[in-house]
Image 1: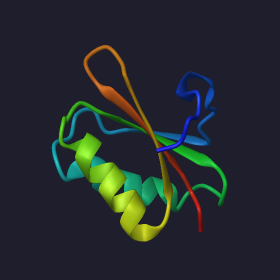
Image 2: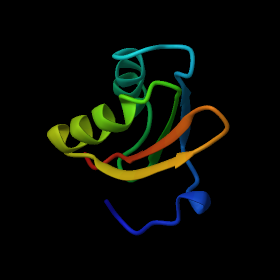
Image 3: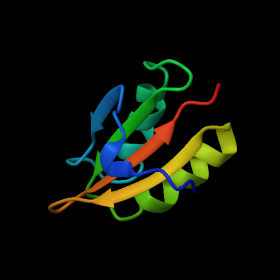
Image 4: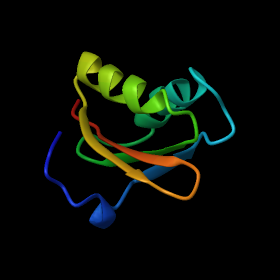
Length: 84
């Protein structure tokens, strides 16, 4: 995880997966990452606590940078930087 100020991150795209349970947010992230350019950031909103484990694991597996997450009101905001 990097020491990026997540509050200052400008996401190129936001995926709202708050209404979906695992593996929904991960599937939405996979779709979303394809819609942004290398070097841009994808923000995923999820209410499923498992997403905080799934997204970093998937990011590492496929070679993107997981920047971290912020807790919002009733959901998490996760940030991935597209690396390839």
